[in-house]
Image (tube, helix red, strand yellow):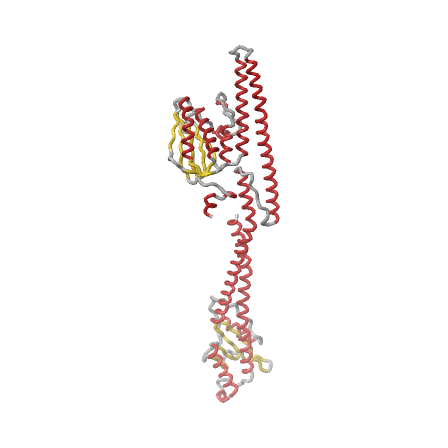
Length: 479
């Protein structure tokens, strides 16, 4: 969830920073240019004040001896030499009063021409257009020279923009560095914020998964995160407590009912045996009643076993799976010989997994017993063990009639038996008990068709045990 939430927050933060950064960058550029323009306005005003009292034209013979004219011309030359800014004072007809560098004329186009025409109207030229770092242009500023209320000449300055563009670019780099630092700080804050918000969600997800997989004691610490998530964690814990209480009561009821019914049933079977003494030995009804009584006794035993399997915690330990499988197959070999079924094994001589040996043995007994029941004489039952990634797989493949796709979805349900197998002894609880025993230790039991016919029961045992909150035991051992 963090990988989906963080990009959204980063995009929003980047949008805010860009929305603030672009206007600020434009403002910085405008402020830098305004400083240059104001400086040029002051320069043109000073030159206009000097030119206001010059009445001699350069073509006049008295121009060389006119002290004011010579002072003005020397000021312009020195200004151009120091600042590399072209400056000129031009009469209304465009003729030059004094210019620097020499032979510079009124610009015929562009900003210089516009500024000259605006100054002829008796006012200072408007501010030139904005100069950007990658834009190679010049700044033209003009001021009128007014004598006796009339505009007699115009002072024009034409400035290079290299230093201005450098200052703007430097300011922009500082702005980018600042925004980058702010973005990094914002990303770090967003990372911490999402972690603070999502940590209770991950804990709640882990606890929910634990309860879904049978660890009903999974709970959530409701001491971190936003108030809403803490309240949700407390509500989840209360719900889990109620669910665990209800399930415990259900298991206790099944176990107590199974236990309490055993004695009356035993007494009933005993009375049936006593009544049978007064009846003929081949009386069919007595035999039917005895068979139903024994069947009911097996159902009660299986109910009690199921209640204990769902309630008892698994004693997980590192176990040699291959050894358990071969041992149980050896125990079932006499039954297979009696039923004339070939019971074979293939797989490694030793492979370890994390399981409860007693629970795995009981579940394997139920699966092998089920395979032998439905496999006709002369057909094989093959048991194999192989390592599948982080699991050890135990496959029991029989040669029986198998199940349909619909029946495969029902197998393992409590008291369910196929309508085609009602004449086979059993209570319909054996595979349910097996699944409960395996689930307590993190193992699974699944079924699939066996080719060309029959059923494949696959038990998968994890190769790593789970410690606290689902942490692999191997990781806990290394810490």
